[in-house]
Image (cartoon, rainbow, N blue to C red; front, side, top):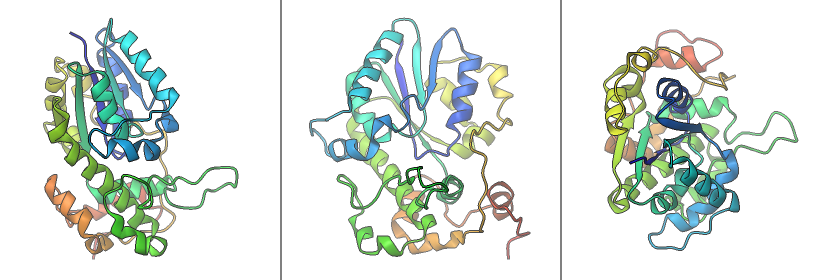
Length: 275
């Protein structure tokens, strides 16, 4: 029986690579999409309903139509949706496709995730006046968990606001898993590309481990390969106990940061070995 699988993530976790690799390796078995609705999921609005169990969802019409399109595709293929905008809608998607749904909670260390979002100007003024600010979430949105951030929100650096977003999304996922009642896989970005994560994912999706996809893990697929103009002090994460606690819960040491790799990928000026 075909099923629908959805990735729940903060974004900047390798979903572009995953969508491309899966689509190319299994074209006869899978219908794969990467962020098909983009902002159309209206994650911040939907959160106010899905964060509370049994609250009646009020989904945007675009999401309702998307569910109908997924249903049609399930007649011939397993459907895989990669990306981050659907994160707060996952409970509604799981209910709609109950008995035919799987969830992949894709996680990544909070520091490179936040640096990566900063390269896309998250929580920063847009470069052009006609571009809307990339405000992923705020502690003033309905349905959030960490309201204590409200008192100091305006004083936080963009990096700290990215950490807040990372904490909220992963806290949402951790609370959702035990009440969802659907097959669930927590997958680390680091293991997907450098460990046994890809093999575990393919097993979860009931796919054979083809050499064509296993050999692609060294490829970089990113439509937004930007860098930071200024080097961020990532150690400020220690001032955010929520982020530290959630990181530990999903298997990360917040101090275990490869600064050289971080600089090479995201800093416009390579700063040399860590001091």
